[in-house]
Image (cartoon, rainbow, N blue to C red):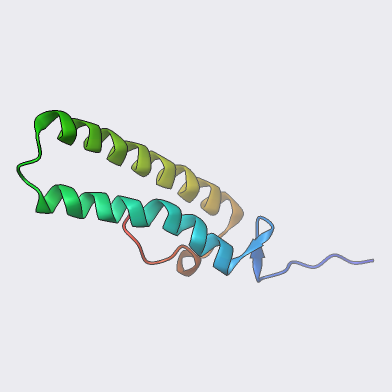
Length: 83
């Protein structure tokens, strides 16, 4: 038996799954950034909570980027969301 590299898979999943994984981070991050930009008069305590959530989303996305880099996931599999 000979094992060969499957170019359609990275880390056991294909392009569609990787795109979905990235969307779970980039879509809420994009929407949150838009909300913060479009709502300049949000109360300070709410803005602070939203900024903390933004940091959490950015950290999660950075972790996913590191995983994808380690597995050689092509950039075009990472979706077209915010970064």
